[in-house]
Every structure is written in C-alpha cells, then in structure tokens.
Length: 163
Figure 1 (spheres, helix red, strand yellow):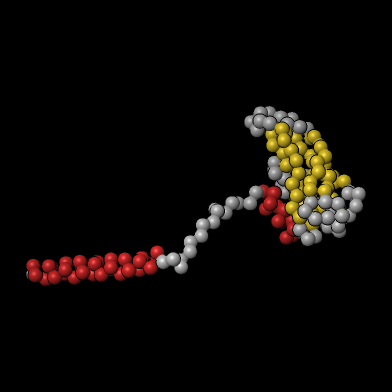
Figure 2 (tube, helix red, strand yellow):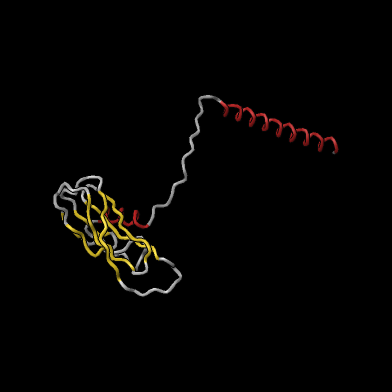
C-alpha cells in the first residue's frame, strides 16, 4: 500500500514538472524580437456635450430637447447670421445663470449641421442663487465655412439658422 502511494506521488510530481517545463517552453517564445506590444491611453468617456451633439447629428431632424438644466448644455437665446456664407465664425447668445462665474459656447461640426450649446459654471455650486437669466454674445470658431449647413441648438434640438 505504501508503495502505491509513493508511485502516485512520483507520477504527480513528474506531471507537475512536465507542465512547468511546457509552460517555460511556451514562455520562452515571448521574448522574440518580432513581438510588438503597444500601449494605448485609456479611453475617456465622452463629455455631455460631445454625447449630445453626436446624438443630434445622428437623429436630425427628430431631436427631443434635453430635460432640465445641465451646465454643459445650456440653451442658446439666439444666433446671429454671419455676413457671408463662407464665414468661419458664428456669434451666438448664451443664456446662463446670473451666478455663473464662467460661461461660453461649444460647437461640433458635421457635413450638414453645426451643433452649438452654451455652458456655464457657477461661482459657488453650494451657495444660494436666484434664477435670473443673463445673456451674453460669444463667438465660436468653425473648422470650415458655414455654407449651407444648419445651425442647431444642442440643448433644445431646434434649428437656429440655415446657412
């Protein structure tokens, strides 16, 4: 009986040794000069404006407004028609809170649309603030001429201008 137990342990030890040798042989091929490993930066989640602008482009013209107030998606109070169709800038009126310390507009362009949204950041998010609306004109730069593209408010999904 003792001889059988010793033989089983010897087989198990031999099997483990065989597996270890096989693993070492497999790993030995990992250091070859032909193998290339690339690292890529971790993917970042798209911000609220980028996600919404992509949705507007994808779903145009059937776009529902965004519910509630979001700092990254403030509705625009209007857009000024550029003097020429080849203009590469657009002036929009951003409606923001009177308590916003910083505000502006962002743009995403596609072949047929120019999607614009206002944004604002409160001076102190925990402080009380009245709900007064303040408006300011701001200019966004375009990568290409406005031409015949439509200008769409990302927050409301409404067309502001037709180029």
